[in-house]
Length: 440
Image (cartoon, rainbow, N blue to C red; front, side, top):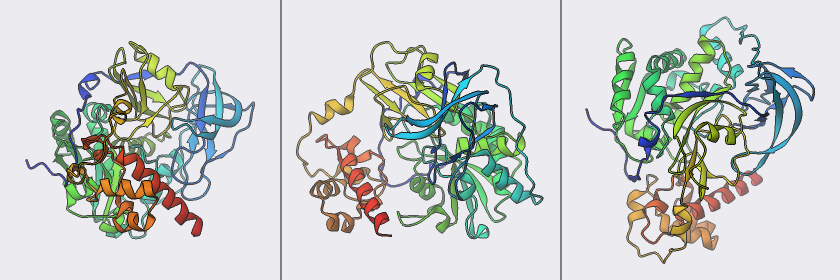
């Protein structure tokens, strides 16, 4: 079978052998649960509980504020202790609902819908369940699945690539419950009569490809395709090009080329919401890295403290020099584990040595080797863009297509001069986007 791919990319050490064979273990939280009211792109949810209220598992505690927003539900039963700002993984403070866990795990009634038409039922349950993109972006799924013209959507692409090094939670999901992923995709396909379903999996997961292919064998609208093991194969633009040959840029949405891309775990949660009528209250989290005693994958309730999850993996052999929320390429460095697991929390990566910091100490001048260009999936010139960013030369930055950077980190990884290209470009991109927003 041909291995579909894209231009550019790199091949970092994947590190998946540390945790991929570890069976999923459920973690029941012991301490207070913290539910940030903004775990998604769009407006923060509005708290609908107050201090002293008792809540149940699956109860709505934060209601979506507007169309582009998402509901937040309690993952334990207990008492609301406070509604106040709390620190999250990226270091910012977000207004949060704090619940004291009573350890009883009493459940709220299941989701209900008043919609009569099947498509509207599916969308309504997804909206109620608070499902968002669980690959990290956090875009509300009910919004993504409601494009202006549903008949123009030709491909529903499920991202099973899991190209980020060290992460193995998607691998376990595919290996352990392939039939539930297929069921979730079948539900989404009911919303788009002209669409074909594609489940894209990297070729280093042959066992998952085999199981998913068997699970989808009786559905002619679903195809499991093999994509080349390469980072960032799971990036939205890269995956669309690899599986359909279509291209999008920073000014376009996937729906502009007839595609919708969903993370594997998002599809799993869609099935859970529609079939089991349960909201999004937990997710799989990989705890791994050479500083971790027992790297593994855990089913973690949202709001659980990262420290508890790390302890479930046996803690650390030594004090890690670097702890990352997510993977090494696009994850966020953490200065504390005293933060909650959210809908976008995919992993805790703890490393004995901070290789990035040591590399930065060795930074030298650009030698014009062109490796950053060959590795860039966005087909830009990272070395020049980084210079323009440092000079704050917006005209040249935009002329050289700086806004097309997908912030994947390939250029920094491959640069022999150890230049921190991605960070410079990313920082200036965010500044330009903020300026554009202010002018609107």
